Length: 213
Length: 286
Image (cartoon, rainbow over all chains, first blue to last red; front, side):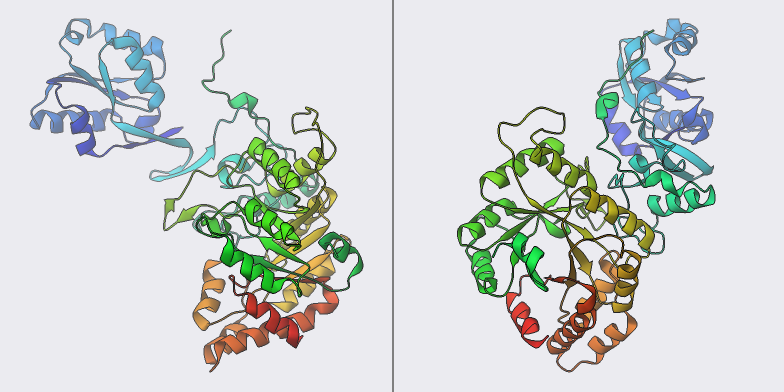
C-alpha cells in the first residue's frame, strides 16, 4: 500500500486559513488501512475543525480516491452541497489529492503526507519495499530490492560498513546485501549476483509516468 | 618513479591521504603533501570524505602533479551522476592526474539530518567500468570521445568486514573492471586481514594495507563504534586505554600491524587525519 501519515494539525489549520466551509474526503483504500484517512479519522477531523470554527459542509470516504471514476460517482451524491464549499481537505495520498483537485475546481488541501510503498507487518509497522523505479530486477537479488532497501543503491555488492547484518546508515535497518546473501544461499542461487551489473537505465523513471492504451 | 611504476616494481608501496582544504587556500595541504614527497609513492586526495564538504580534490591533485608528487584522485559516487563523474574524469586527465581511486562514498547523514541529497547512480564497480569505457574512447552512452584518458585505477575493500564473501565477490568485480591497486579500509585486526587475504588469494591485485594510527583512547572508541565496518579488537582498545603516552602507543600498534602483515600485502596506505608527521615516524620504525 501507499503509506501515509497525518500532517500536524497546526499545518492543516494554516492551509485552511480563509476557508470558512470545508468538505473532508477520506480514502477507503490505503489511508483506511494505515488509519490515517479512514472513516474514524475523517470524523475526528470534522469534529476538531468544527470546534475551531469551520463549517463542515460534508464528509465522505471514497472507496479509492486515486480512481477518478469512483470520485465522480461519489461526488454526484453531494452535487447540491459542493457549491458551498470553500476548500476540500483530502485525507489520502498525493494521488488521491490530485485526482480530486482535478475534479472539483476548488481549493484542495492535503491532510496527509505520502510516505512510501509499504509492506505491512502489523498496524504501526510498515516497511518501504519499492520505489516504483519501473524496471524490476528482483529476480537477480532473491526478491530483495537494492533500489528501495540499500541507501547507496550498491548493485554490485555491499559497501563494507555493515555490522551484525545491519545497515551502516541506520542500524535499525537490515543490510539489504546481508538479506540477499542469506536468501540466495537458502535457495541455492548465490551465483546470480556474481555477474557485473551495469549502471541502471533510468528511462523507465522519467516523470511524469503514465500508460495510455 | 610514477605510482603506477612503483606498483609494478616495488615490493613495498606507500601512499598517504591528505584532505583538501575546507576553504579556498590549498597551501597547508600542499605543504603537508610536500613533506611526504620523499617517503610516499603517491598522495591520495580525499573526496568529501566522511561526507564532510571540502574543496574538489581535483585541484589539489593537479597542484601536486605540478610539484612532481604523484596523486591519487579519490572519486566518490555520492555527489555526482554518471555524467558529472565522466566529465570530471576527463578534467582530471586533462590536468595531468594519472591515478583514480573509485569509492562509493559515505552517506551524507549527520545526527539524523540529511546534509545533501545523495546521488549514488553508479556504485564503485560501475565507476571503474565507466572509467574503463572512457579509456576505450566512448562515454557511458556509447558516444565517441575526441580524445581518451588513461588512468591507473584503484579500488577499496574492507578486509575486516563481517560480510567477507560478499566483499571478495565485489573485489573480484572491481579487479575485473580494471582496478590495479587496492587500498584497504583501516586494519587493526591482523587475524581478520590474514583470513581475508587467504580467502581472496585467487584475486591478483596490489594490496595496500590501510593504517590509521590511533592518537587517544577516545579516537579508538570512535573508530570502534562510529566508523562503519571497522573492527577494533579488545586488546587494541585496552592498550589505548591504559597507555601513558597514547600517541606513542598508537604508533606502536601501527608499526606492529604493518610488521605482522607485511608478508600479506604489497604496501601500506596511511590515513592519519592530515598528520603527515606520523607517516614518517611509523615508516622509520618498521
